[in-house]
Image 1 (cartoon, one colour):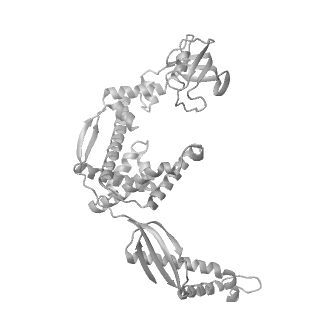
Image 2 (cartoon, one colour):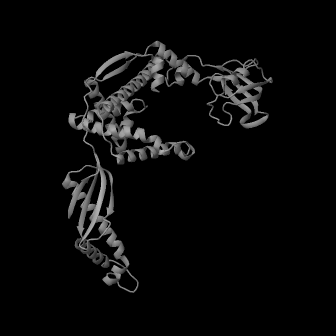
Length: 435
């Protein structure tokens, strides 16, 4: 076999190769003879079909298979001899022009992995969020939990903020009813932004049975493009008014949160522990994002197009599966592969940088690190030991834990190199931003 290598760009290469036709013909004959020994054909005993008939019927298919295998072997051997790290799949093409009767000639065009030269991050700055969980945060969380368990009672008074209202309404633009502008027994809670603020404002103060006609101008960026920026006339009739009631913070409330003996002290302790776990998780996520960005900013790489295309397709398939699981179709949304390219470039870059960091600085995940992560994840379940066993019995899940441990090692390394500053942050703003 003869080979020659061409550089077509920073990462693109072309291997030209030849395989002796004599070798291909020999392989074809051997496979046809082997096939004839087991082939069944009408009019012949098993294994007694003439080789000529076998060749007539199966020769083209066998030849195609032999050529495919020969090309793959030639390419693999050439790549190994040239010490090339192929990214993606090669484009195989037979040689065009005057044919060589003695050799089968073809080329393989492909990309190689880039050499990754890690940048210096010692002058890079990273702000690490610092926040504590105190009584105020526990109290706010309890109010959220109470609101999640609120119930409504009928009241005989005009509508007030926070009430749940059942109403009929009809909207028209230039005297013509429009799609989505009519509803009967429609239920909404004032203050939860189900309706436009102007619509809710006109419901305030109305009693059951009362009606009101008012004009409302839809925002220019309203999601319903047919009515965006237009003014509609609405007729609103109130049919039911219900007042919200929050549960008392008592033993029954504690039991509803899983505290079996209803102890309020235990309830607050558990709420605080849950908040602290969430703070830790979001703080770690924030640090990881910043650390990865430092690595991206410091290390510039030529990326193989093949890897970006593969990662883009992976993101598309994952998104499609997630949407279908929620009963939606990707084709119904303004989403195309091009929307994933930037994310794919980031993921490919980080993958190459992290692989180099792991190799150069020995940052591979250790079994005890993986075990600690598995234990930590299991702690949020009622039977942690069973969850641990389950995770260790699932190779894919365990692989995800190993990847997380490896990323933690990378983040730790970045924090040891960069200039880290702890910065106090507002609890609500940080948790809202990180959500």
